[in-house]
Image (tube, rainbow, N blue to C red; front, side):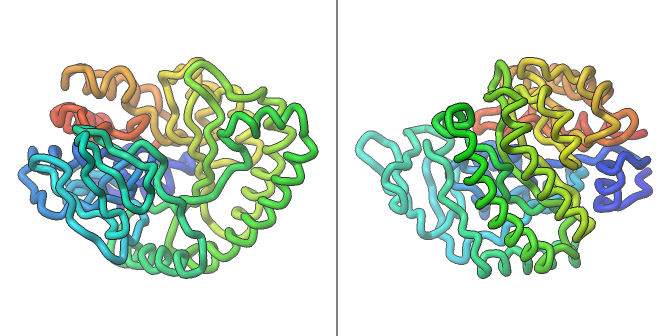
Length: 374
């Protein structure tokens, strides 16, 4: 029997304190959510309505996970996204009808693909599941912050979900040219990061003032690893990027009770000691299929110093291609590694893709709940 509410459960878990069961997340981040196509199939399989599925990320074409699904799978977290102010219904094919931002207004092309009018270079191939460019840039103006703050307050007052505000960078670029300049022009990188850091501190202060009483964590984001290893030498990152992460974490911890949540894909084991020293509280998505990311080793060496949020199901080699029984076994094995000693929130490693069998999604989430008890 559950003895805690969701927000308390997650807060205690990421603080490495005892909880009644392992917290579960599904869809509170744009990199560990679910394709709208797979979500429509999931709702249909559960006998739930499919007449208003809202898209919260156009590029990756992710759906908002609604409250009835969160309740069905005992999920403890919710996405803060107030949604588009104006929407339109869009039917890309067959039974799939979605609510999308009106400004997107996809146009059908002769080859059967779709183009977003708001971005002529963004296309969804015929029978595809997402657009081939990153989602449209997000505005960080005060008006947007106010809208998100109102949504955070509504969720805080009407639900008991744990919430994380997304949208801060972690002083590292995925651009190869930028990474090369870390070697050739380190002084320039330092100057750029110093300027960016001043901007981030101002934004963070506004965020804390606007919704620090409603959200429980703030996300910073930069992928540091590829499938096979770090994108740059960890010593370079520690010199040119880590000091700014550390100062930002310190600012957050001095001025609020918020946890700092780092989203960082790939093979990143070599960065974890530095990230812990910087004050990062939570690491997501824990890409266990990448080189050096052995779950048992991560938990043994770092499990008492940083909370792992993710790594609960291998989306790369199991979720999309295995049987429901294989998916459940994968979840059971991974949660038995990560769950002991607390400091863990269940989430699959990356987004559930549009062609993942619905039976596998259900198997994954049901197995997570079955294995969640302490």
